[in-house]
Length: 319
Image (cartoon, rainbow, N blue to C red; front, top):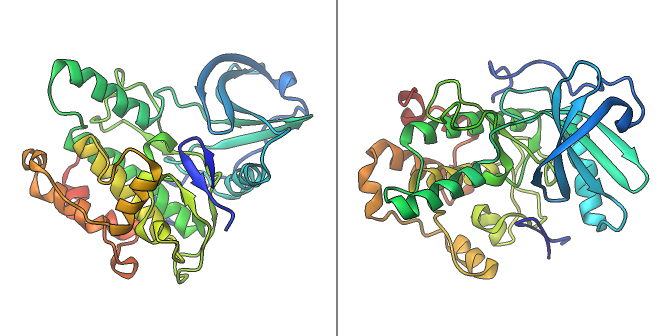
């Protein structure tokens, strides 16, 4: 088993959504070298494969993010994941809640991916900052229901879109959900707040109607679907389970299955014994009902992303 960031890998309808922008990833730059088209700026974060930095187009001054990957010495599985990320994102039409890959540059020992800029960081960092701040000041370690449903609706929209285009993400987690604008400027409760799914390194082709047939053990322990943790064949439904875990974490400030080690976490996920502590009493019954609606152990009973979007809690909690 290899660790990529906090993810594990082992070698063993939304099609017509209003969120679709209707354009493929564009090779919009008329330059052959990254340096000819961009000026590199500050570090934005440390991604799974390498640094992510701000960059500015020399012509027009548009800001982007660039993921800089040192490919020399990269494990073959990680090389394959990188190429898959590029291939699938270039094939996937643009969507308001999926980070857009604008182009890629391959140089000697380095790959540079020019992506849409999201100024608000990732949801994992936002939740962690919230936990740390409220640890000292008191209060709940979680998002409000309004913010949580905002995130959930947009994430389900992105997943439904991917599935409609025969792509399963396989690593849905807060660290792979970017916030378009800083929360201080546009709070997640706001109707104008936008989140976007990113990092398609573990994505692969999978039709929504396909029976479970995927076998690779990939993903992040806390967000794995039970069928993956049990080493069973699986399909697109794994993404929906992961969204349910993200929703649980947004509402309660912690994941439903947690332990000291990845091995212990995976054991808990295999059992899939979901429980709700007293903290849930502060939330509406519909919020808990939505979590239960999504986190269904039986794959055949689990809703699709499009069906999950129809749950009353997702539709009634309008910002």
